[in-house]
Amino acid sequence: MRDVAVIGVGINKWGELWDKSLRDVFVEPALKAIDDAGVDHIDAMYVGCMSSGLFVAQEHLSSLLTDYLGMGPIPCCRVESACASGGLAFRQAYIDVASGANDIVLAGGVEKMTDVDGGGATYALATAADQEYEAFNGVTFPGLYALMATAHMHKYGTTREQLAHVAVKNHANGVLNPEAQFPMEVTVEQVLNSVLVADPLRLLDCSPITDGAAAVILCPLDMAKKIAKNGAAKIVASGHSTDTIAFHSRKDLTEIASTQRAAEKAYKMAGVGPNDIDFAEVHDCFTIAEICVTEALGFFEKGHGGKAAEAGETARDGKMPINPSGGLKSKGHPVGATGIAQIHEVVQQLRGNAGKRQLKNPKRGLAQNMGGSGGSSLVHILEAI
Amino acid sequence: MFAARHWREIPRRYRMEAGKCTTCGKVFFPSRLICDACKNKEFETVTLPDEGEILTYTVIRTPPSGFEDEAPYAVGIVKLGDVQLLTQIVDCEFDKLAVGGKVRVEFRRIQESGKSGILCYGYKCVPA
Image 1: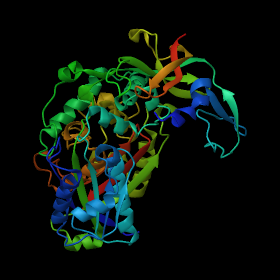
Image 2: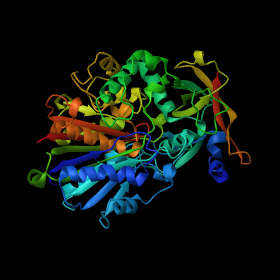
Image 3: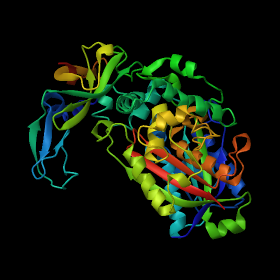
């Protein structure tokens, strides 16, 4: 396996992009990534997209997106792992380059979610759960994470206020991100007074519905050192794991075991542990998710994720900055694009290109992306070079 | 919901039939073709107990399409014997729901398939 680096990244302003189609939403950041990398061609593409079929009745993205990016006839593979589709596209691109099959590969993610109404979006997202044994009984995705929250609060004494602190912190970070969908501050009181969605989760505990895309360019590390126009970051680990699709089948309803296993693989591959990570972008689709994920990654002991958020340990100036981009909560969550946008943020931070939200000289960053209620997880670790 | 899709789940939804691995005894709901614990491919049909306890719960305030008339409603993960499953918890007061609360399985209407489609029945739990 060859060492691999990321040499270019691109993202567009996320939000309700009424004037843009799925193809345009994707092509814009893909062109930015190619320009940032300074390459004149790409050899192959992997694109993460959860459900273009249900959101815009368009499948066969491999053909559509290479065509509109002006890159036909290169090979392209669309991958799906629910909300972890982007992270999986990145892993497949990494393996492709590491194996020697291709040199310059684009990993992208896209979701166009606002061409359907709220009910249509909820329906499409619910396909990431067990249709016959979860969705059939009337549970929603906020409902599944609410079940996780109730269990975590019961077992560990995690409080409603601690959940709110996750949203407050991520919105404070998102204010500094020009691409964020909701770059405004929120207070603990605003979170606690927002409308109930599924007890104990309220509207401001939930990530939004978003149109958006992101793209990154990978190439062998040796090549990166010669051609990278704006710097590069080395991929030092890729971990991937799955779990039961039904949340109710998990042994411990307070744990995201797929993330824990993916992280164990990634730490082993990189030869590091959680204490060696300088910052992380994690999958905060709901506030409770960030708490469970930071525990699964080993940043905090089981049951201490809420306390850490409340104490400010996960803030940009805390001991383990989590989601300096604003996370899914503030930046937005176009499901297939999220995993790539996390890599975008990690690379920008490691190259010192993160603008107003730049952390102080980080050397090693982690990205964690998951699908459904934790039925699939990807963990990547990158280092500054 | 397409009729065949509901019809093929009837043994689980109407009769709470699970599959018990004939080698290691692990119980699956629904049954499956291979045991994830011991890789055995033979199962005997067993019926889940009709009483159990709540492991976690929530109240759905923003329902998915098809459930608008029922919201708000409670949903829980319930342990029935060796199996954990997700079900609505009905005929209950929300503020009396608790982890560890005892519940009983009942046969109820779950959803309907549009104005002219089939009615889909299944299991819900009530406080025991």
